[in-house]
Image (cartoon, rainbow, N blue to C red):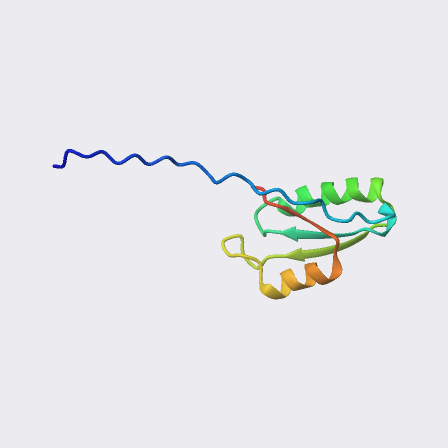
Length: 95
């Protein structure tokens, strides 16, 4: 046994600041991406969210995607599609 003590302090580094992104001029032109993680009831939760989005932004476009499995990350093709076709992505998981 040694006479030394090692302290481990589990602190995250200070967050870096960044400027907010440019907002769309008209909310009606927003394109929402929906990423379903393929867990039970995620589709129901996302359907309720989409209903709220459509109520607030009736002219919004909705792009729906789904992961092949909840246990793995989204395929790069899915992420690229969301990047190309949407302004904001809503992801949810449920059980």
